[in-house]
Image (cartoon, rainbow, N blue to C red; front, side, top):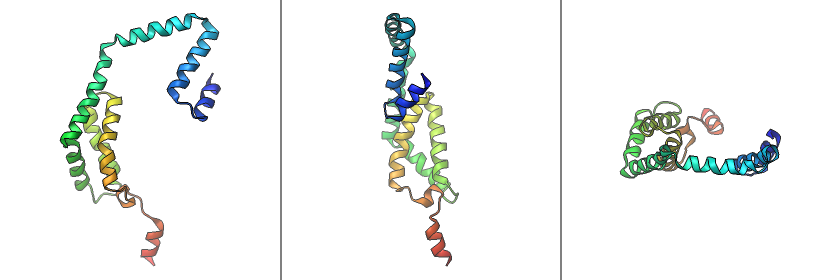
Length: 145
């Protein structure tokens, strides 16, 4: 089963579909048609889970926060504050995402908020090598000679 999963992922099938089809296929071989009833009941039970309704709301909260400009201002302020430090862009992304991860409380929403927040700023800074903390070795060699 593990070999089939790794093979399916390496040929490009999405992980979610790979796990779903593997579970249903191997479950069918092990349990017969009962596996489809179990999958149906598990899906219905998951839809009754009230906690999962909070995930879209946390993502919406992150989106509203980004539209208000709070994340961009915090991100820019931290970036200006830590600009002399080598690798400051990475540190600022981690600090800002930590602040907003505490606000969201859900890992999936925090990752989504991080993508919404960090993407435009990194594009604006054009991901210069100096901003990332890396140096272009050719440019360093030219300036040294």
